[in-house]
Length: 183
Image (cartoon, rainbow, N blue to C red):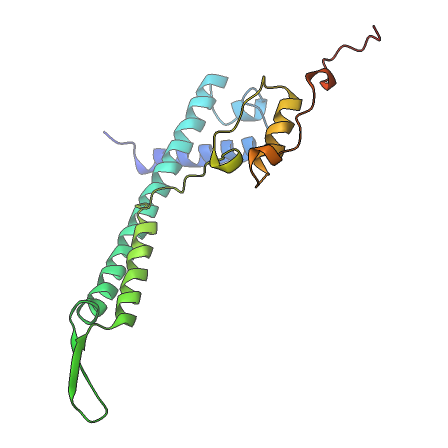
């Protein structure tokens, strides 16, 4: 049986106050949190998690409703241009002679933009992948993971010429080993 409206309102008010306190940096152990009616730190923590989950669910439902509405609008717009974009129409010369049939390329462009918008709205496009490559598109040479090796990789990655035109690699002796002794 769901809680009464009064109990639900009381819970919502308590959670709102808890969120305000937490946003102000108040810990769950603070007496002000206990004054809201929480028996322990754990009870306040669990209620905070419930409040955040409820908020996330409400936001997801609102986003879903918005997405549905936008999809319906896109459906209407696509229906309005579909025929012009897919059915060739007669084209005539200045003299009124039928020369050929052609689809409306502006309608095709509009349709493609609507389809692109729908794909973005619904997350249908695959994320763009980025790959870092070494000289001439080859593999990036890996070192022992030291700062010097990392700087070498950065230098190599920025080069555009053949590998034999790369700057000479610094000797491993130049690498700072963290040993401050003079001997």
